[in-house]
Length: 295
Image (cartoon, rainbow, N blue to C red; front, side, top):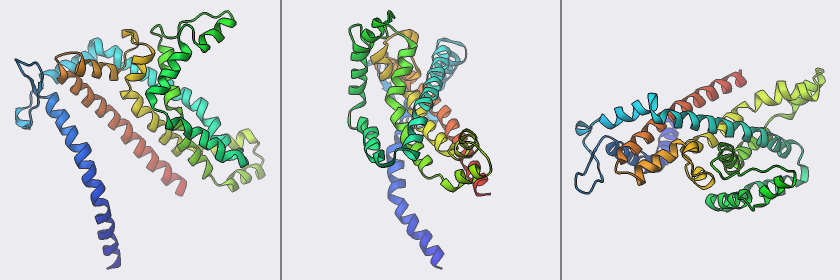
């Protein structure tokens, strides 16, 4: 009886959050689908949502899917995946050593270093991107530093590497913190057992620390990769070139720069479907790893 009472209690406590999600996620997402499968007002040229699913029209969806598979949007999708993958890999190369140091070797400086890691969250993302622009512009400090070594490079001239570095700069703090939490919870006795069995520091790290930190790595990767796919302002501020456009830039273009907002809404639906696939893979993989660790 007490078990059922506890289930009812937790169900009641979860009720407000469930209603909140339904109101602020499910309903807006349904409204987006109604716009995607709606029509264009012939006079004012704005989107007319089809609130009744029986009235939905799928011509725009078929047209956008054709452009994604064989048309101009195909390059944009491939470029977006390449940029996000490169940015995530670079973020791990930068962030994992930082998180490992904070969790294992920071000692009494850990609190201060963690505060410094959280400090960027106090500054608006767009302001941080503006600071990045000031560093990379022709007379910026970064450009002057490269010029001192005889390397002339215009970072803001529509370069893909600039967009990737901007994504890394903007999102790497979101990767370090969950990685730190995962590494900090590792049982030190397992590392000591590996050392007792003859494993050196490198082998202990490869055979114990890395496998046990995989759930944290997966979570950190998802946390930064998902917003990167929809990011458009980083590209706008650091490039503004058609050669570096990502999916988010195309969504912004169709919604705000054309009289075809349905195509922008369809792109959001397609991108959301792709991200749901990635999230499902993450959840299944995480559950499998947890079962393996418990076994």
